[in-house]
Image (tube, rainbow, N blue to C red; front, side, top):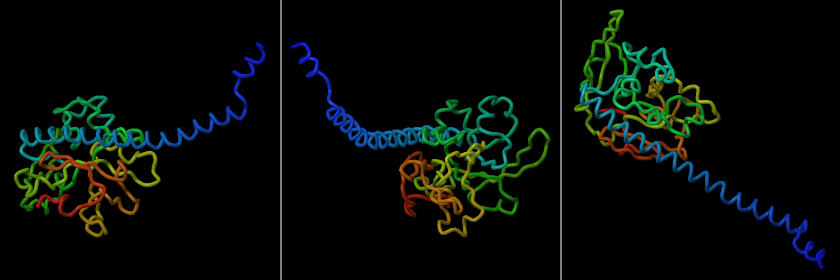
Amino acid sequence: MRNIMKRKSAFTLTELLVVIAVIAMLLAILVPSLSVVRQAANKITCLNNLKQLGIVVYAYTQQYKVYPVCISDANATWDEFLADPDAYKDQMLGVPAELWPFHKEKKLYDCPMLKRKGADISYCYDSKAGRRYTVTETASASVTTLDIRPKDETKFEYDLLVPDRVKSPKTFVILYDLPVIEGVTDLSLYHDIDPDDYDPNDDDSDTAGQGYLWQYKVLGAQGPHAKGFDILFADGHVKYFKQWSDSDISRKPN
């Protein structure tokens, strides 16, 4: 009688295989769903980050009356700056370093998805909002010229955008997710202290005026969140876009 009870309580090979098959099917159903949920969570994190950074940009423009300047040739990485911000206090390192005094929380500058891919910094600055220009470009109606003299007294001229001269703040891009380059897993490209979307071939591209939103030369860029981007606009609102919209998105202030 005891032996019969033992045999009845044991699994047969067929039953074991059925259980394994059921578990495999459940995993096949659940894993993609979990991936979708994680992607949605990452997108929401970035939306919240950019909303907070919008407040930071506003605070900056209220104090300095211009948008931050892009410095694309800064000789420092974001991680080096965070390790010792005081070492760079006499240097202009660009947008994130200029915003840092207004909000010193590293997570605010990180997209979880881009961070996993190796990007030191996650958000791209619209180069039309402020970057170093040649003297011949200082006559633009949308900018003001600033003469900056670092410690060595070398003269630099920058054209800085005045917020009041942005014609449509609700469509003018300020910050957005860095693009993901198809086939590139280590985003070492984004270790720069000041990632901006300048493109020397911008006017000649099929996607002229879009910067790096859906175009990174010929490398096949796309947004990190289901191939779309979270975008911060000059009026402070943030919205997700999967495609460019001429009526809703502009990188040009006027």
